[in-house]
Length: 217
Ligand SMILES: [Zn+2]
Image 1 (cartoon, rainbow, N blue to C red):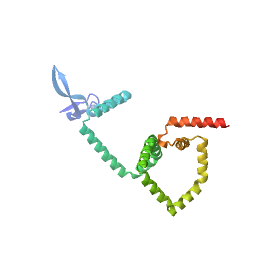
Image 2: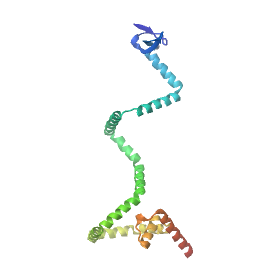
Image 3: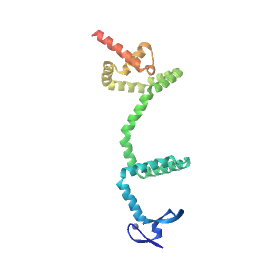
Image 4: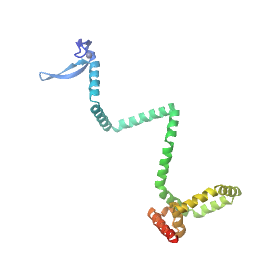
């Protein structure tokens, strides 16, 4: 059995035509489309190109819909598939993994720093708590450590080496009323540990120091 395509006018076997349902005299029957499979594909491609934006939007919607309709089993299967693919790719492309790591390193460091800053008070509080609970033990350990001749020597050499830069930094901290300097001041004056000093308290203390400095001038 053959059929002539209405588009390319070629005679082709019926298997070259997509089957479709149609209604003839109120009865549903199975037949074939009038265009052959290649012509049908081409017509679809042309229609898509003619209305590309709309087609893309529809395709996106379909993709989203399919995503939503996935069962948990399908999701898990996809996850494992992606994982296996990813592992294989990383094994096959070590150079590119390394390059990507280098590319993202600065950003990763920056993000790590940000996360640390967000949690810094919490971490300091934990540290302080631990210190209070183990005060004697920690102090004794420190004492012993700093009594060692090699440690003493190392510390002396280090302090001598960094002294000039550290002095400049410390002077700048004092001049600019750096938050860390203010915290140190509060700790010295009222004995409040650094992690318990709030931002508003720092601001207040800074204002007080500023006023004092103005008055002294
Ligand atoms: Zn055709």
